[in-house]
Structure formats: structure tokens, C-alpha cells
Length: 115
Image (tube, rainbow, N blue to C red; front, side):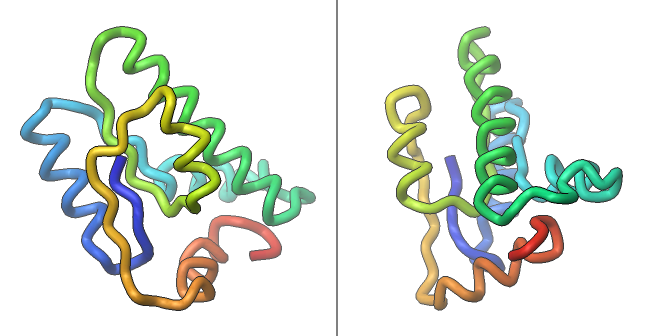
């Protein structure tokens, strides 16, 4: 799992590691953008949208691991979600930046209604 705020290099690192491991990258932006485009997130509040996105990523990753294959997660996550995933997903890397929480919230505001 590669986690961190915007512009900290997590997508670049995730793609480099994924290339070396021949593993898929499960990226929040790529997963949520089509849902927003097709108005699948309309009517959901901020927390529900976050939970939906993280549940979708977790489902995909756990299936990948069940098949005995590696997976890379590229997502903005908070400690609560990392702790929830920890039993099933080993946290290999975490990129943090000294940015206010508002910066991360602004980053996903285009993907999550009410953000």
C-alpha cells in the first residue's frame, strides 16, 4: 500500500513498484472517476463516498491476494482505514507530507460529492 497526500509521489512510486512486480495498481482516482462521471455518487455524503471507494479497492485487492498475486494500492487514506486493512494487506510503504488535512480533502473534492 502506498498512501499519502497529493503531490507526494505516491502514484509515481506505485507505478514503478507495480512495473517491477508485474502487479496491478488499484488507484482511487481511476476507480472513482467513472462512478462520478455516471453520477453513481449523487446523493451520497462525503463519508459514504469515501467508504464506498475504500470498500471497492479493498474488495479488488483482497481478491488479487487470494489469487496469490501482488497488488499495489494508490489512494488517499486515513489511519482508520489503514488499521482496518492491516490484517489483510501488508503496508509496505507510506508516504506522508506535512500538509494540512484540508489539502487532501481538496484533492478528492472533485471525485466525492460534498467534499
